[in-house]
Image 1 (tube, rainbow, N blue to C red):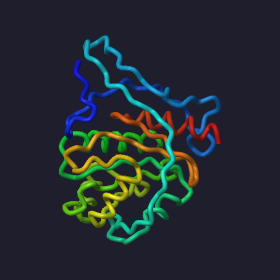
Image 2 (cartoon, one colour; image 1 turned 30 degrees about the horizontal axis):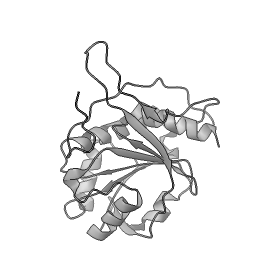
Image 3 (tube, rainbow, N blue to C red; image 1 turned 45 degrees about the horizontal axis):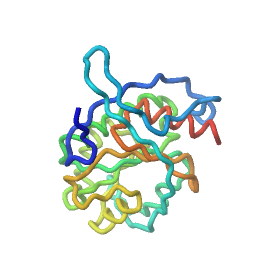
Image 4 (cartoon, rainbow, N blue to C red; image 1 turned 135 degrees about the vertical axis):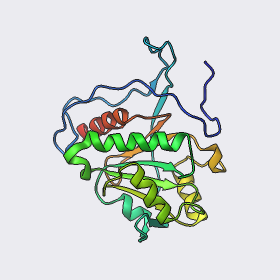
Length: 217
């Protein structure tokens, strides 16, 4: 099967689901929990005979630029301050008119909220628009409502320059929104390194990664 990595805003195949575990500690940590392997190679779904897409995992440093952005509630904020509020962060980049990658990624964020249960407010979910000209705070609120975003899940927009600088800082800038590819970034706490998941990460992938990160704290 031909790989879709790097294609222009095309659907990504779902990957196999990891088994979950009980929340503990900071609502997530579990002794002995392992993160995802550096690379998950494609496997074949026995029931359907179709190939599942690999996820590439890497650890990276990110210098968050001092950017002024606007949350979906219309409040101007500092992106650095929003990300450094002390909670673990799970972050992606979306745009509301996307009909392929973004809805799928947003649905997995919504499922992650469900997995976190009563501890969901201990993790900060962040979605940054890569189409700020169209994605006004009002439009982001509507989009957030579609995916049942709770108070711990914030959407951010701003100027085209601010959006581009944020994308460059996190290493996901591809020149235009139509070249957008699925990437999820996670960080345990301010000052920690980020874990980057290239590929279509499911809620179970993100949950397992958070467990592994916090178990090592």
